[in-house]
Length: 246
Image (cartoon, rainbow, N blue to C red):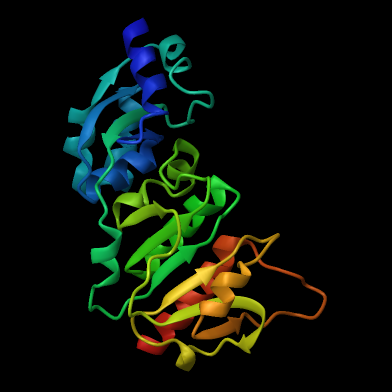
């Protein structure tokens, strides 16, 4: 069993692998085409019940992906064992960011500039997947595929292209920057194929990105409220876009 523990611990540092901690990340990864390399569970009856209730479309593949281990072994596979008693390893998909930005579909691309929290990144991925964004791109030190981001995103990194870049590549897409000094957000001001750029809650967007933006917008808020959580801001703007499309 030590070999199993070592494999799962090494996977956390492997840029080609994703560690799926919990039933829900595994469910979504399978639903959106992930290649599962191996997985383990503590309680097969509980996994079966979750599959029947929440993911009957992938229940057979969930069963096929998992071997049974003891609780003692399971607790050694991750610093924070998920309560659903499931962990799996999957291959990360390759994302061609340039080709993704060239796409002609009207859906926006979400760009997170130097976000500080992997949990916020994962929550933003979850929103972007639900809203039908074309992609989510990040810059900075935080990997949007690290285990905590995958956990917060419930594995929906597999539902749309998600990648980290050194800086936002140039493209022909309109660039809209979320800025407290911008115009109040209205659905009509969100053009097709926009890149929606969000900064961190503390620092906001860089002066360079603000200078490059085609338009600056802000989310109207009650006086005295200084900011929104990053994922909440992403949700507000993406669903304003969905209202425009509707």
